[in-house]
Structure formats: structure tokens, C-alpha cells
Amino acid sequence: MVGLSAPRVIVVPRWSGMAKGEWYPWLVSELFGVGVVDLPDGNPPNPEAWTASILEAIGDDPYALARTMVIGHSAGCWPLLRALAALPPGRAVKQVLVVAGWWAVDEPQAALQPLIEPPLDYDAVKDGVQSLRVLLSTNDPYTSDHEANAALWRDRLEAEVVFAPEAGHFTGAEQPFVLAQLKELYGEL
Image 1 (cartoon, rainbow, N blue to C red):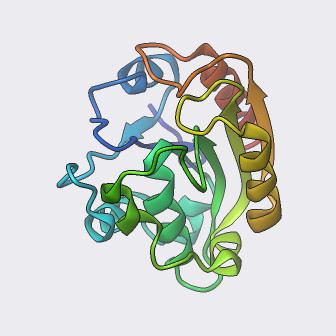
Image 2 (cartoon, rainbow, N blue to C red):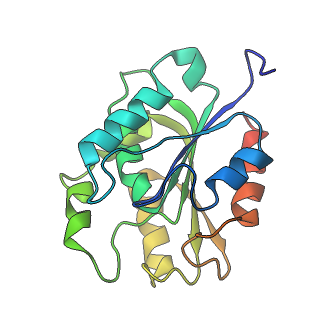
Image 3 (cartoon, rainbow, N blue to C red):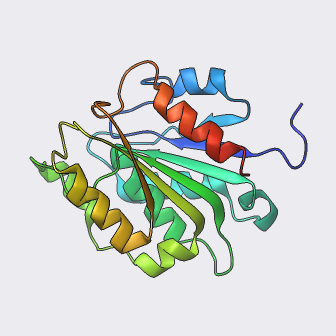
């Protein structure tokens, strides 16, 4: 049984990712207290609906937010960042882990444009999270310049960036590197 102070872990899937796809079910089986947001209207991305779903999942109760970790995967990081920026003043989740997050992709698709416009309010995002860590792969097929991507995360949101060697886009049924990072952060909650 989850105690009142047990951490909450919420996963926001990537574009076309479903709660029962990728490594999300595996993560749920590996860590106690993990929930996955089922993003509505996934193709093409619906940024407003996605952001609303994330806000509903994380809520705005200060006590709950103080023990909440949210994981955003790939394109799911954009509505997650918008949800953080939309939290009421003085409310912030404890930790965010962005997996394969990006500021630009090598071959942008028109369907991604609504996710990245209008520009983010970086200060509002930073106000909505106490700690932000980003996991990037050294061979992500969508963002080949991982160093430039990392610099943008650091510059714009003061994020801690961790590189995973040869992790691709963090897709597949299991992601041990992601789990190791989560366990490290989970212990800090």
C-alpha cells in the first residue's frame, strides 16, 4: 500500500506512444507507484488536449506536487513543459525527467509545429519544477547534434543533462538506463 508520503511517478508518452506501448509498461512493473498518461488525439499531435491531460494527471495540490516526478518522452516533453508553465504560482512538481527531449529535430515534420509554437515561457517552466534532468542519447536518429541540444536545455531551463551512449531514441520494450536514472531521482523524493 502506498503511504501518504510515497512518491508519485507519472509518465508522458512520446508522439504516437500509448500507455501500453514502448517501455512504459515495463517501467510500471519495475517501479512502484507509476502511472502513464494516455494522451488523446495522438495523430497529429493535439498540444492543447495533451497539456490538459497532463495537468489533470499531475493536479495542483501542493502536497502531491511536492512528491511528484514526471517523465516526458520525446515529443511528450513539449506539452509537459507547457503544463509546468501553466501551474498556479507557487506550485511546482518535485522533479521532471525528460527522455530524448529536443528543441529541434533533424528532419522536422509539419505535424510537430503546433507542439513548439508559441514559444515557451522559460521562467514559468522553471517555476513549475524544482529539479529538471534530461537524458539524451549520443546517437538519437532525430537529433544528431546531441551536444547542441544539451546546451539548449542547459541555457533555456538550467537543466542537468545526462548522456546515454548509443541509446537511440529510447524506444523499445525496456530501458535500463532510464530506470537507473529514475531510481536515482526517486530516492531524492
